[in-house]
Structure formats: C-alpha cells, structure tokens
Image (tube, rainbow, N blue to C red; front, top):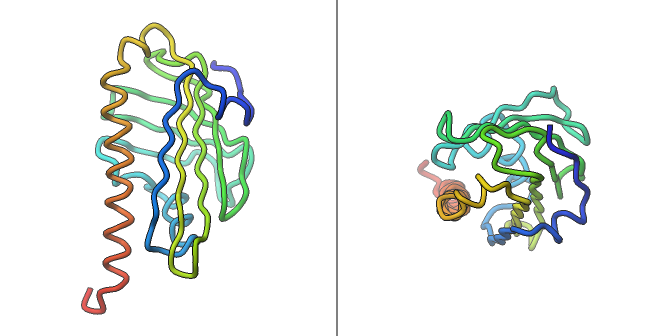
Amino acid sequence: MLPAVDETFLTAAPTRFVHTMEVELPADVVWTELTRDGTLAWCRGLTIKWLSPRPFGVGTRRQATLFGVLLHVQEEYFVWEEGRRMAFFVTSARPPAYRRSAEDYRVEAVGPTRSQFTWTLAFELTWLGRLNTPLSKLIIRRMFADTERHFAQLASASKDPHR
C-alpha cells in the first residue's frame, strides 16, 4: 500500500509533469470525456477501469493499466469538484515504481465553446521509478499529445455537419 497524499503533494512532489491544453470544446464536454467509461482510451496503451459506482466523488476508486503489464495501479480520489476538478493518489503500484503518486485534472471554461484542461502528474519515485524515468517521460509526453489529439478530433467532428 502506498500512503495517501494531500493537495500539497501536487505542487511539492520531487517529480512533476504539468501540461495545459486549450480545447475547442465546452468545459462540460471535456469533463464528460474525462469521467466516461473508457476514459483515456485514446492514450495508446492505457486502460482505465472505474471500480466505484456512479455518481463519482471523493473516495471513488479506479485502476489503470499501461500496456497490460508494464504498470498496474489502483487509485483513489481525494478531490472531486464536479465539472471542474478531480485529483487522486495511487494506493498501489506494480511494479513498485512510486513511493507516492498523484494526479490532478482541472477543467476551466474559457468561453461557451472553449475550455482549458490542465493535467498534473506528481511522483516520488523508488529506485525502479528513477531507473525508468527516460521511458516514463516519453510515455507521459505521448499521453499529453494523444489527449490533445483526441479533443481536437472531437472538436472537429462537432463542427462538421456531415459527420
């Protein structure tokens, strides 16, 4: 079991990745995509399964698997502001790459048809996690790029009346 973290860890963690993307979709659409069944399936190799029933909130659990066997984590949400923000910490990880780990998703309306999504990953790594840092950086950058591409495709499809 990994220890729980609080919001201070999201800004004070030894290793952090923060990516903000402008999205040509309303904030409620972005939020729905981030909380739907199969969320983040657009990130190659990532599978997410919600373990708690809806409605989601603080205490909600989910699991994430990367390429089936590369990484398997259990997560628990400690922040849930419906439609705006959610954050979780990792309760267990195989292999043991983290001492502590958390993620934060923030969705903000920029206008009626535009929003901003900020995704923060925060880690305190074990020796194994530090050893895998070059690969982890590549995977995280690709997850950010895949997510931007997914939202751009959704935005394009919503503007094309022939789709």
